[in-house]
Length: 159
Image (cartoon, rainbow, N blue to C red; front, side):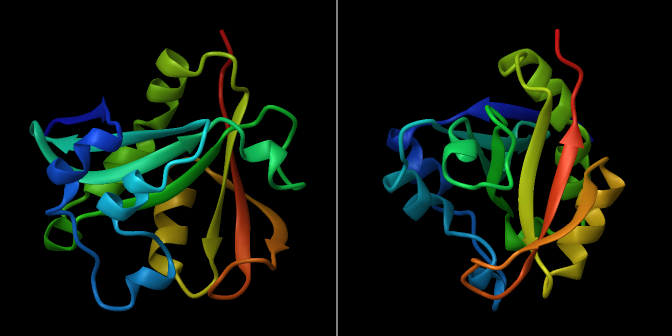
């Protein structure tokens, strides 16, 4: 299978409308079409392509460190990760996370690391992130809407 990324914009809401959540996942991430409508400055939405079909969504937040004190100065954050409910279990999420360093190198070459939070109640996502090279910092973010979140960081090679 072939994985790729495509930069999206607010005008792409109709293209991501088919991406849905499984019951209960709304506490961990957002519906992509709604998230596109609420983009903030510095948030770059990306489509996850699986064999050239839009199968997922994520945001790279270039201003993440200005919002969260656990993020390093200038460190981008990974937000709103979603693989379509109908496609979960196919390895798309794992492949997308494993391909993140290449995306970051190509599009955000100044970034030395990437940070995210993942809810403690979401062990499946945590396992995917850890397998892909994120490292648990050993601290928790307590400001999540669904409870404590692990803070994970992926080291990146800067150009």
